[in-house]
Image 1 (cartoon, rainbow, N blue to C red):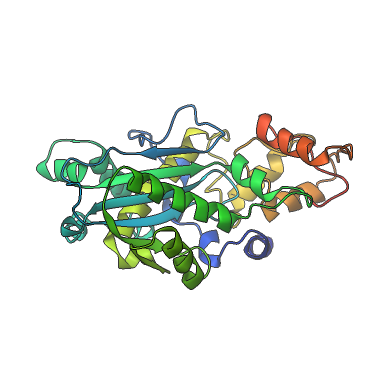
Image 2 (image 1 turned 90 degrees about the vertical axis):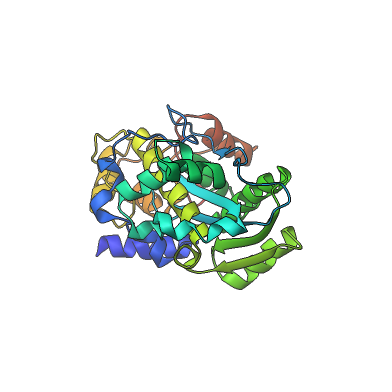
Length: 329
């Protein structure tokens, strides 16, 4: 029951929807993942600052030829680890071939299948089909770290809060803009929605005039090019979290509804530092645990330049030091 209530709090506080709080694949939580394949967008050791990776334009894509582009994310709901936005693109004439490789909503595929498909997009591992994907499909990822997500969402009342939807929109716009800046002739964009589809579609259409933009729920199930992006995002998110596992496999999937995750958070809570930068301090789950923990120490910040001190602590320290005693955490 407690996990359900925590999930409800996340819905109202963090701009997430019910689907975002569900564990994507119970049988394949990140602690079970192997690291035989490391996506190019992940650096080891994993950084605490957000990062973006873009593939070169694939060989088969001819400049000027119409291309379609899809966008999806992974890790919107978890209290642990990064949220990853990804896009993929290919020539419109090639897109009809994507279902034949097995691309589908990443939540409906096993971890092994997702990794195999993503690996084939990144490497020529032996067959003509592998080379075909590598030569025809471009992709990009933006790894938005827990520290940076929280830094935006925990700005004090004197500063403008940078909520999760705005961060997601900006990541999407930046990824698409980089592809267009390379000279790829994108004529159609398909996006799995963040929030209500209509205003988000209108916003993207204003940013990218002359390009057909479709924003809808379940886009990863409707459009194969979004399915490709979904796989890029999910594999990158899972492996990124695995690469920085500091729990010896005890922190579960990272979702607030996962009993292993909440137990690990409770057991490892430091009375001064809270947790390391892998935890989203802006999540209601984290706030509640800090508020109810009797050993947690409140910190009084000087009123002078309070906002700058607070943001500086989040952005420059390996750990976030305490919380404001005079305002909501």
